[in-house]
Image (cartoon, rainbow, N blue to C red):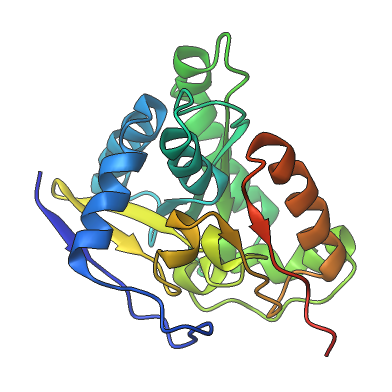
Length: 221
């Protein structure tokens, strides 16, 4: 399968992260060991061809946790509960419009196909609406996001900031911080949006699953 890099992030963490094509190829080879990831990429690509899911990415824990599982010799889907599918549609910011997309995906029966025995849930969210509910949920405001890439770049840790989109059989990867932290089991805070307590709670949970994870402290500033 042809692969390309879509990696144009403006912010860089310390250490000048690697953004080489071999790293992208390695990331895809690891992540596609998870059959649920492959199934969802194919389903999202098909939906997008019908005009749905503008600016979509499969993202978050289903990707970086798959990588850590495979590198640690575990089953690829171990411990993964949510498969996050982002899209960005600012033409209608109502909940009703987003709910139409959520219900359409529920009607595909993917949860039933890939979920039994795994507890898999597919979470479909319009990132153009995040600023409408983020403060109520997390206690801090969020500015209106500009794209799904913008949303992915705001995850609590740099290793988490990865997304994949498939178009015409080509997998594009958004990884604004590169892959060094992800491959190296380093959890580095990304304090641009998520609050400290969210980062620390996630770090504690992930450290139980991957004990060799190096958790860097939240900056004092």
